[in-house]
Length: 339
Ligand code: PEP
Ligand code: MN
Image 1 (cartoon, rainbow, N blue to C red):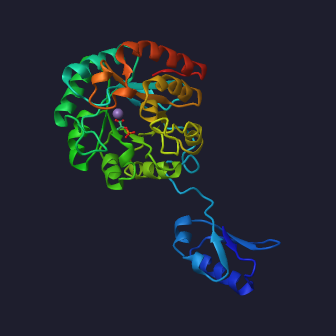
Image 2 (cartoon, helix red, strand yellow; image 1 turned 90 degrees about the vertical axis):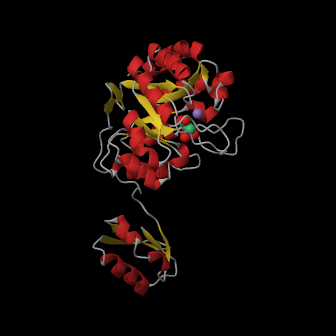
Image 3 (cartoon, rainbow, N blue to C red; image 1 turned 180 degrees about the vertical axis):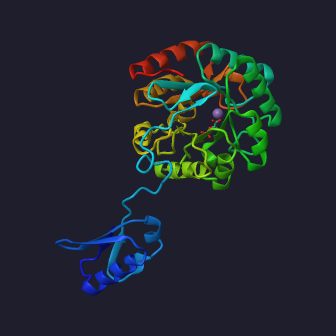
């Protein structure tokens, strides 16, 4: 929609109309009491390339259609995207995915112990980082390739598929060999080259929302993966930066129903990174279930006091079965059962 200034005359309106018509869009002139608006129906990309904002008499150009294409529920996709990871359904209105595990793979023993605990409590996937994005370059950055081997051993023993982060395109083949789901972390949501690499790996991608990214930006990031022919993308709300410092991030719960409305992709919530505080993880997990999330991803540790990363937000492994039961009961209120 091109909104003209109140002073714009016939000649200026005609010039805009003419320029729009060069792209083959359908043009509709809508005279109003104060100003004239000109509607252009057709390819928004071509209209955006016309430079209409710089033309005489143009006040502003307002895009009406959404900037994301493949992730949108507006266009081809009206049905929710549903797929299975090793037999566990993600995205169906009747299922709730409980993904749990340590923040970071620290040792074989630690990872296997947590994997057994979360498997016994009904988790459908094991999370755990082998390559960790750390704010300080001097912090523990994960075990790397040996960490992936440990995750594979945990899958072997428990049968749980593994979610792990792809941090660097150079590790793509290695990570794809061991992971069942490729995680793109919040800090890399706008690493477009990495998104394209992830899209080509032939595995589902768990895409976390950037800490300061809008939902439009999240869906456009998802488009990068989808355009590689990979339909299996899971969106994850993990908290955003706001003025509030009481919690590590601010969990944007409204993102869940908004994303479910505007996209066909499954949406899960990470209450661990959002809150940074294990005491808040359960209430936020229950809230995620209440607003229609397709699942949650949470951090769990046998001994959080000695965790090498994110200890304060890790649930005690000894509390996990109770946690899972209570969250599952909340998901059941929305007609969902653990997948
Ligand atoms: C994680 O899940 O291990 C992680 C680092 O999360 P985020 O990218 O959301 O900070
Ligand atoms: Mn973590």
